[in-house]
Image 1 (tube, rainbow, N blue to C red):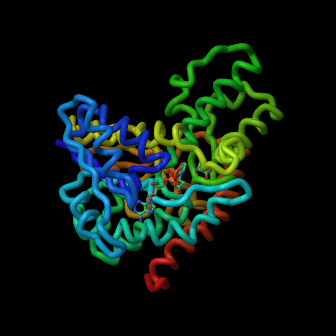
Image 2 (image 1 turned 180 degrees about the vertical axis):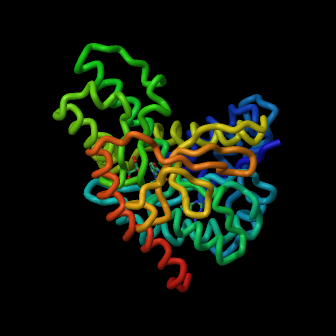
Length: 338
Ligand SMILES: NC(=O)C1=CN([C@@H]2O[C@H](COP(=O)(O)OP(=O)(O)OC[C@H]3O[C@@H](n4cnc5c(N)ncnc54)[C@H](O)[C@@H]3O)[C@@H](O)[C@H]2O)C=CC1
Ligand SMILES: O=C([O-])CC(=O)C(=O)O
């Protein structure tokens, strides 16, 4: 029995993500909350014949929290794609002003109603919204470092796809991107130069100009979509796929009592961890990293081995930018009056 609650379920990411979750046999109950149209989305999905229960919840007034609480009741997993997306010319940090309070408010209720649930944050800027969630849960005494994640899976999807294309261009090799999964991974944060692709043995196949293009596409893939959508939002379908990859893996671990390998933006300093270099651990406590994930959450974090000199340099650059973005999230919770 696994109940998944999606907050922001009627949005560009929320709808396709909810559809994918509707089709997952491990999810026994799906609760869809949004400030608009969640009940419509739930009724639509309810016509798909599965054994799963699906319910929509929307606030009855601006101050009503009963519907949100009902959506969160007994949730095992809470996924949060609520908030505004970018328009051309904006950075993810420009979303902070609006999304910080949205995430804080939603996580506050989750901490009250389902303190043991896994919290998966999609809302940007992830580098700051995850620290917001952590600090808010700490305030409520509901924080478990093994169960709070920033979803950076899209950086991994992009790396797998763009690396397979680059390898094909260089030596004609047709590599299935699925074979790159877990071997080439993106670590760090979720914006521009905080994203660090780690290529392992694949790096040696790439001439430096091809590598540079690949690096730029992975770090700035979000901009590519924002530009192409030209004012109508950012990545939604690839993000729903990415969110589903992470959440379905987590749900599988819960339902079948498995240990799975995953990567997400986590607060690593209170978790069993190996290999975290001093350049990271001496300055920050959040990083997107690979870990073993089971029913009780993150079991063990492993910093990737064998980084190239270039990748080590990129880690240093990422840490510098992440430090400020993490602090912004932490300070927001402690100094905002919301
Ligand atoms: N982590 C990642 O890799 C990615 C993150 N994102 C982020 O995901 C977020 C959502 O993006 P989209 O779905 O495209 O936006 P959208 O605008 O299409 O959907 C957002 C939904 O959130 C809802 N919402 C707003 N305030 C809410 C609240 N207080 N409670 C519940 N629902 C609320 C809206 O009504 C809307 O339905 C954005 O912040 C975007 O930047 C987008 C792509 C990738
Ligand atoms: O770029 C954006 O604003 C959305 C996002 O996080 C991504 O596509 O990686």
